[in-house]
Every structure is written in structure tokens, then in C-alpha cells.
Image 1 (tube, each protein chain N blue to C red):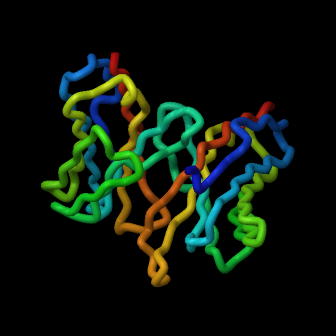
Image 2: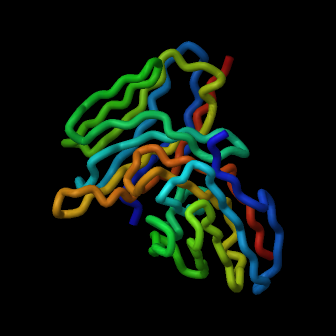
Length: 117
Length: 113
């Protein structure tokens, strides 16, 4: 049972426009939400994260939004650039019932972003 | 240069022939992990290690073994590979378990015929 779901396998955007990548999760035992980016023939690299106690985190062109009531996470890229074309994975970091983080990262299926010049 | 290396990058083998995929990191990280990436399933954790001689199962451990005899190395062993283990494999490391930033190797494309 997939606890982290990215329902859009792919997204195509024009250069300069906004890219919005979405992610849904099915329980609340997470303390951090993360995005990783993967280029072909390379391993994923960490992009940005957000704590579960926040609803927004911004880093340059990348902003992550967290809607806890909807159990939904999104990544906004503004403006999109051709070099942003990659696979984007959302991930959650789990914690146990005692409230201390056990640190397991659970990844979604990934969304292929293509930014056209 | 800080990095995670994996070898081989590509491997085609036959059912039942034992193989090992090596993973090495030069960052003195305590935590290491193996993932497999399959279409529509994303990255799934196979095994992880919190330190030397400490390993545990991830979400999809069946058919795999690991060992952590040295801090820098974390090999993945397939004793009797089967076609359903055809996948893209990634090794990752982080300074401790739970670190938000994991460093991934470049991947090993395995095909079992």
C-alpha cells in the first residue's frame, strides 16, 4: 500500500511558466516532507524540505506548500527553466508513536517534468 | 570529492547466478541504504544500515542480502537472481538515519534473463 502518491506521471510546461508538482500522503506519522530531483543516468539529489509544523518553505525559484488537512504536498517552480526537466520524487520522513524520529524516508512514484524552451 | 559510487553501472545476468553490487561512500556517513526504482512504484527501500554490523530490512528485502563490515562499504548481494529483480538500483548514504539529505549513487541497471 503506497503511503505517498504522486498521481501525475508526467507534466509538460513552457519555459518561464509555473510548474506545480503534487503529492498526497495517507497518514500523519511524518515530521518532514521532502522533494528530490533526478536527472537521467544520475541518482536523486535533495532539493527542498518542509517541516510538518509549517505550511510553506521557499528556496529561490522553488516553494513547497503543505496542506495537512488535505494531506497534500506541492512543489512550485517559478519561473520554470529547461534545466528543471527531470524526475521529481516527493518523500516523507516518518516518526514513531513516541514522537522521536526514526528517520525512514518513503518515496512517491515520481513525476517527469519537461520544460519546453 | 564527496560521493557515493556503485559498481557495476550496468549488468546483464541469468537467473540463479549470484551477483554482488558494490557501494562505497567517502563521507564517513553512518547510515547507508539500498533502493530499487521500478516504473509506477518509485523508489522502494530494500535494506538499510545504521552503522557497521547493524543492518535491517526495508520494504522489499526478499531475495537480497547485505553486509556492513566497514563504514564506507555496503554491498548488495543477490544469491539467486530472478527476472523480477530486474530493476534500477540505488545506494544512498546520509550522516545519520533520519537526515533529510541522502546522497545517492549513480545507479546500477540490472537485467536478469
